[in-house]
Image (cartoon, rainbow, N blue to C red; front, side):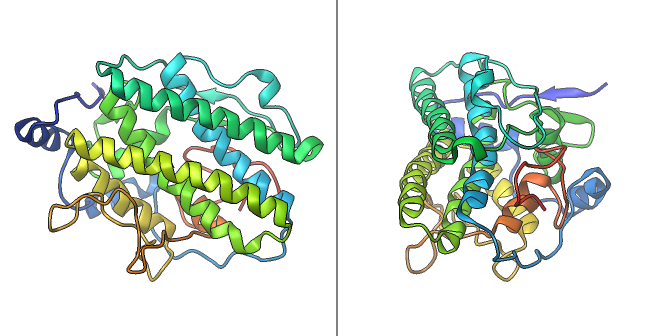
Length: 306
């Protein structure tokens, strides 16, 4: 029988952290798990270079796909419902959302943090759609069902007979959020030098700042409840999937070898790393060079989609 796995919440004490760390997995990403799951969509390879002949609306539509993903995740976890039908129409192939439900929070402060992120992500969708006007793409098909299980198995958080449900409890929901947050920040950072219109660049910078606040908050909350080992495994898997920056993907561990916390994934110059659109797609599709898969089973909408 397949076991649905949610991560049990715990306190911020040392004993609580150790208990959570044991339950959600520690150590490096399991190479055997990644190999075994390669046929299911998670594979590792280098990312091809991203073509530069794209327009500002192309870039914002690419970002809109990611904002749809984040908004649907947070809204469903907080309210049990996603974006309104009027907020997901547009060009391209429209799709529904599989999975997701309201999370039963035990900690009011976690609910407050994540409610604010949900509100912000919905606002980002509305803002980018307003900027793009009639050229905005529709929400593509999004999978919150099997996608998380595939990633959790590949990261070694669960075994091949288990499933991972990020909506099972507040800790699982935070780990699911961690999958997205750094990806969004690095995507905006990577697109900055491709934007030509100064107004569009200012819009992207403003959204990037908010996404960075979200990512830092999620990292800090996970560290405080003892989820650093699991987050490190997720970060390593993202780096391998991304394939960028000499095979590291620029990822920074949440808990460093000296047991300090990285609330922001920065390099030696205190800058966040940047990902090309192709590197971002490698992560959300679950395979380098793929045209669809994982969170976007039919691919994203817009010019930048593969």
